[in-house]
Image (tube, rainbow, N blue to C red; front, side):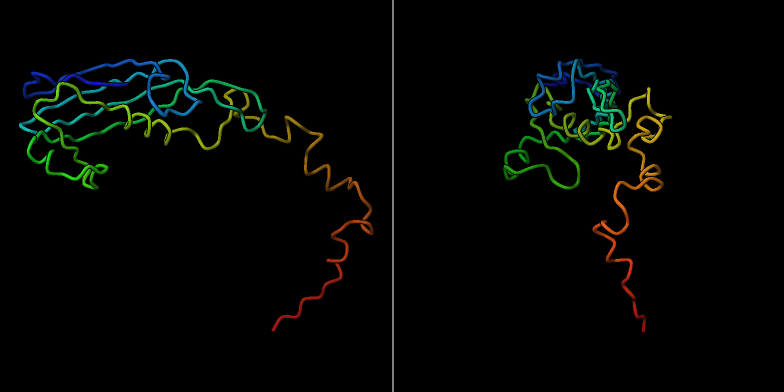
Length: 176
């Protein structure tokens, strides 16, 4: 759980740093290991609070090229807007946050829990193509030449007559 204390927060900009174990964040993906660190600023202006931070966490990933496990640092930008309004907080329906991006909190709240936002942003920033730094300049064909498609083109395993695609060679296409 990642909480930021806002009790007695006066107007101004304040730096903050929070470190939490990845396993303590409910619902975090199993790729994330170690500690999650959030570094940023919190700005209070009247009844508004703006949190601007960067979340960092180690991730244990599987390389798409070599199949080896490697660790990488995943970074995510966190920008949150809060409005302090107790009456409006109790009047809003008990649903997810609105599309405007402002989150309502009560005046008597002592902490802001940003665990859900950190979890979501870290998950969104996981790389789609997971390539180990050791193999970043290596192609699949260089690493596994025996599985290269070039070799299969020059040395086919089946003769052309027994290939399941051999019948398609004789198809004639009539264009209008």
